[in-house]
Image (cartoon, rainbow, N blue to C red):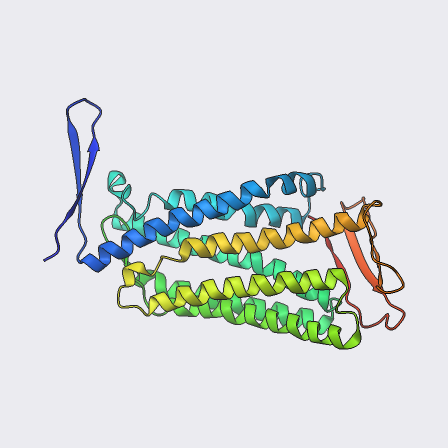
Length: 330
């Protein structure tokens, strides 16, 4: 027979105490809820730490730029996941009994988590899509196909959330005790789309290696960042989906905060790396590769619409097969 756990907190008058009781239906449920609590704290600490150590880069590389859609996207993927995780520390944790959540309030919090996760995934995917389009010279076929698949991903995530949210069960402190299998649709939509983007990246890498422009710095940067970002997000998504198959569904949200933190990490790191590379190329004192052995790089700036950079590669062997990047600067 499970025994209730007791939380003791001091009252406003010395010598008086307020006892807050809450219980779990099993030891596994209590352990799963505690694991979720610790995971939220760890994921938030990781994201906060990485933001702090890269804050000087943000001030130097991002703040001076004119406002654009990419700059707004950068701030969204960097700070929305951080701010969204702060209130979630009060839901389904040891602090929750003090707020006396109603079942309806718990349901609203679940909707909030689903909307936040979906919006962050979509924002990061936009960054990865722009990277792929740059590798393919913004070819109309690739751009149209990727955009169509992107819409399918969004539809899959919406359907997965719509089917699963009404079936999610939680206890008196809003700790999740059951997650429907239909939520797998949400995760698979994201995994499949990101896998397609990675396949397109690898195809361009192989093509570049064969044609001799695979060592161009900007190409290496786009492929490198796309590769590590894919594997990091793929591992997190697959691990999260595997938790739904466990008998103890109360631990199903263990990796949810890590999905937010890692998605944020991948999104703003990719943009920071690209912005840093652009500044290095435009720096007249930077050491550039020898034009006899490496294709040349050209950046063009148009200040009438903010900073806009065009990166083109000119090679003695091929001027048609090398990728170009033309996107709004952060």
